[in-house]
Image (cartoon, rainbow, N blue to C red; front, side):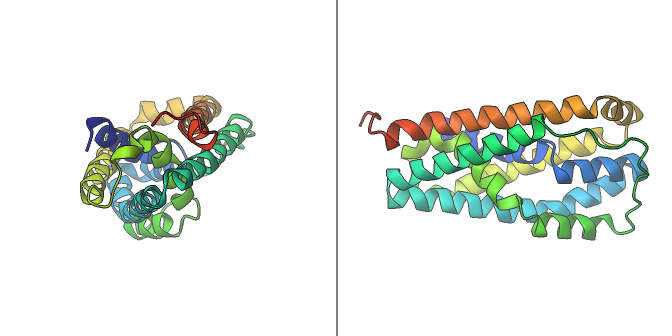
Length: 213
């Protein structure tokens, strides 16, 4: 197992949580209105869903690799286009209405658990993100490496949660986000486009027969 594969799995899990999305916006609202403790409970509940989707994504990727490189490349191509669609949608998203009241969540852990497990975009985003960042080390993927990859991914997820919990609830962060929400969403879209380009870069040569043995 290569260091690049381990680092790619760590980064995939990290970015899967850190890149702004529905859960990020929900966390920001809870943290801004109810403080870091409520935000931390939300993230602990959401971690369950993150683990489920990340594990399923890695299993699917490893399974595709054991079937054959063509399937893996095809998967990478599909994920690349999916990431590009998400990125383009974020870049062209309309700004939200200003002055919306923050929703008070009485049971943030339960909200995070339900939000994470039932998020319909959790699996495809995890699959696309992990594919984009581990495709370069596809040759080292097998089911024997899966437990280590899951462990490294768990570290990445927890690291991302700690980072988010550390910054939510701060007045400066809330004010900055409210003042630059449109820019933050646009930047997240650019990141998704970058991941899409990387996924397509790794998948296309194999599908066209250009990859060296």
